[in-house]
Length: 391
Image (tube, rainbow, N blue to C red; front, side):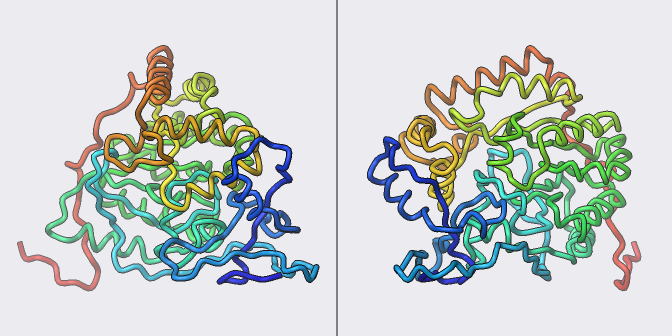
């Protein structure tokens, strides 16, 4: 058995699709996917392969060399590396999102969502956007310390900080590292506004911090729920809490007085778009005051990773799903243009937007949504060990 660039990395899997009506390209993908014992090695992960990232000089694949030796690759285990970050607030100028700064306490995400648009960012670390993204994680234990210093800068002007832009701040390793909680403690002491997006019910652990912040107009939460179907959720988001647990988290947050919305992200044509109305009804019943969505995005390596996921779980839908996706992206897999990348364009994208809007109107979602969070309560942190201002 020949191995790729990282011996643990080349773990490929897939079903026998010989009877499916697939194109030559799809059949080539199928051939790459089929490898004995790969499913056991993956151990409940979302991605099926671990191909090299786009910046690597060599691209290698694992293949059967005919020796029929047993597969010796161990199961993928989550490995967490502690990273001493230099800065913690990330800036952006995107007109597509309602914030210009964010904090990512971690790199990579163990939830393993098959569709995650953040996967390609792991290529910047010399790692694969596939299985590496969900198993080789980085934690930033000095995040709270850095945040206090950056907020203390006399030039800093407060605006909403987003948690959950490129990694889930409440993924499983947060239970051990508690970095997100430490960041919230700094923001609470500073009277600084924060918005959070998460798939995890672990956020209810921090209700004690978020409730007083919300009472001051300083906190808002969005819980990402892509489906109500537990089987589909397990295939798409193998290590995220179940849809039922996420709805329970919405209910708990709303009961604690924290403004909470539900984010259906992504909507995947012919996979979960039929659930728009029922999912919004469940969100409203749980106490959500607002809702939003994002149409499936497939940047960089995610184009192939998502096709591999479809080939394995929904081979008969592959061509139909990708045809609809491309119809919302000008005939391509993805268009990164501002104003288009989140919602797409074309007839199908317009139909999704209209259905979502009508359902929200009928259910009253958005009517209780608050405006921008307050910034007038901001108190610049004092940094221990530094000379204080005389004025």
